[in-house]
Length: 475
Ligand code: AHR
Image 1 (spheres, rainbow, N blue to C red):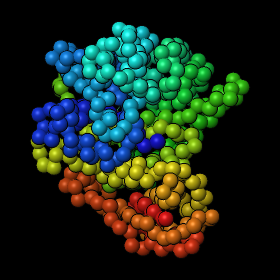
Image 2: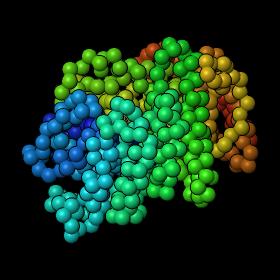
Image 3: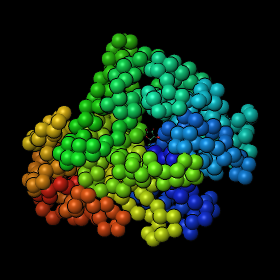
Image 4: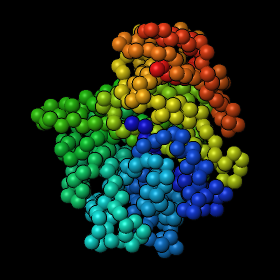
C-alpha cells in the first residue's frame, strides 16, 4: 500500500537520487543522505521511470557504458535527459532503500516490441540477445521485476501518444499477452483515469476493461488536489472526493466483472496521489531544455500535511481493494523529501513527510472497519466529517489509530475497543499548532507527544488539538 514514485522529472533523479559529485555520494553516485531519508519512509514499492516521461522514453538509452549513453530531449517535461541513470542504476538504488520496483513501459511512442524486449532484458535468465546484454552490463542475475505498469495516463490529452480507451485497451491487452509469454508470474497495472474530474472518467475504465479485463491485475487511479477555492473547509474536504473516486472505480470494475460473468477481481493501484499546486506558476516560467531543472518543487505547508494525512486514512479505509498506493512523488518533485545541492541541511523534510511516514510505518497489518459517529460540515460537493479516523492492527499486536481533526476547535475523541486485550498505551503523537501556511524549510516542524490520552480496558480517550494529525498506538 505505501509505495512511492520517482520519475525522470526535474531534480527527482539528478540532484535527488543521483549526484556523483555530492559529498554524501557513495561509489555508485547515490546520495546517502537521500537514501537515509527514503529509508525512514519505508516504502516497499517505487514506481519508475514515469510518469509522463515514460511515454516518450527509450529504455535502451539508459543502459551500457555511461560515456556512450545519448543525451536526448525529454518531451514530457521539455528538459534534457542525459541518461546517466537508467534501469541498472535504479535497480541498485531500489535495493539500497529496501524497495521493489513498479516498472512502467512506454505505450505512448512505443508498444509491444519495446515492452517485450525490456522484460526479456530484465527478467529472462540468460542465453538470449537481451538477457545476455543485461549480463554484459553487469547484472548476471535477472532483476525479476514483478510489478509492471502498462503505460502512464493514456487517457490524458497531454500524454505523448494519447489514445482512446478502445485503442489503449487493445494495446494493453496485446502488450500484456506478450509480456506474460516471457514471464507468466508478473503483475500488471492498466492505466485508469488520471483524475476523478476528467471528462472521460467512467467510460474510460469500462471501455478499456472490456478489452483487457482478463490480462491485468490492477487498474490505476491518479489524483492530485489543490487549493483552488482558497478555503480550508473545501480543501480538507477533498478526502471525501478521494473516497468517492475509489468507490466509483471499484464499482465500475465490479460491473464489468458481473457483465463478463468473471470470477476475477481487479484490484486498485493508486499509483499517483498527493497535493500539488504551489509550484505551477513557477514551472510555467522555466526555460525549456535544461538538465534537471527545478520543476514541480512544491513547498508544502501545514494545511497540506493535514490533507495528506486524511488521504492516507482514506487509503487505509479501502485496504480491501487498494493494494498499491504510491505517494507522488518521492524526492524534490511534489515530494516529502527535498535536497539542497550544496547547502545545509543537505536534505530536508517537508510537512507532508510526517503523516506519510507514520502511515507507512504504522499502517500495516489489518485495517479495521471502525464505525464512527462524528459531526459533519457541508462543503460545496460533499458532507465532510470533522474528524477522519481509521485503525490498523499489526503483526506485533499493536493497534494504531490515525485521526485527523479538521475542526478549528479541540475535540474529545473516544474509541471503544471490542474483543481486544488492552495492556496500555504504547505511544501517542500529535502534529499540530502550526500556522496553516507554514512550510518547513527551517525544519522546525516536529511530531510531539500527546499527553491527554487515557487507555482503559475497552476505551481510548484523547483530546484532539484543533487542526491536528494524531497517531495513537495501543498494545
Ligand atoms: O507526478 C507528476 C505527473 O503527474 C506525472 O508525470 C503524470 O503521470 C501526472 O500527470
